[in-house]
Picture (cartoon, rainbow, N blue to C red):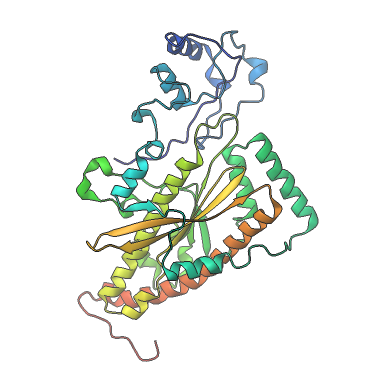
Length: 389
């Protein structure tokens, strides 16, 4: 079944209510029915819940109102007899990524997190060294800009932030459409399900949810030669082509009910799906008999998970096991405290280095597609490499 992350949540404010465990579900239902629907604002984010400015002025709340920060899923937990924090809830009212057994489910599909202290392949380590090579250097931004960003981040850390506020900050600070390289495109739509690495032999019970990152950065179709553009869909049906960075934002305000752990699960699925797309391209090159070009294709993808206080950078890469099944490993690179000026600058340096690496990667992808195209245009004929290519 196609599943997308729930983005719609309701925030209920009022005076705290003290009620008995046996009757709280009925009290909630009665109060919800008495609240006018125009008093709430719906939004795409699952954590960005804000009341309309005139809510308190125009809506008379009963003295026996529910406690604040109850969202749609938490209400179901309460009405069903579960605890207010939802820790004893059934999986039917939770997104899959929030299930307690979601990590084992990912492991069953070949997706796992690299434990602390475990080494990564040398080629991956060399890329990580390149990405973090400029961390710790002095900041070049103007003093006024640094002070403005510092105040914004300190307030987010102290007061908490809605998911949309975090997204707005990052889209301005790291992923501004004006500052992104010309060939890079950012997108925020659900990814195509066909490339999700699912171990189908495990049955429907091990199927994982469709990736729905808050932000996906890849290449614009027009950044490829005109002769290649009509055939890009053979390997990637998403709007951003051959994506290399998946970003998930998590609100940490007083109404937030999710966790960075849940968003990390989303990130693991999204990055593994991006790696699967690159593996598909590499396999097509190998079918044409060009091992050398296939070896130049980087198959690792980066992921960023953040709230209003910290950001965590990951890399996901594939490994072929002895039984010929592909495994996807996600490695934690480092964390960044957003209210720390040096950390925030280091995060920007890392993302700038990722963009630099991505541009070189795009050139290698274009060469690979040139190797594959003759096989698409004239099936059954292998292309011989010309001298000097």
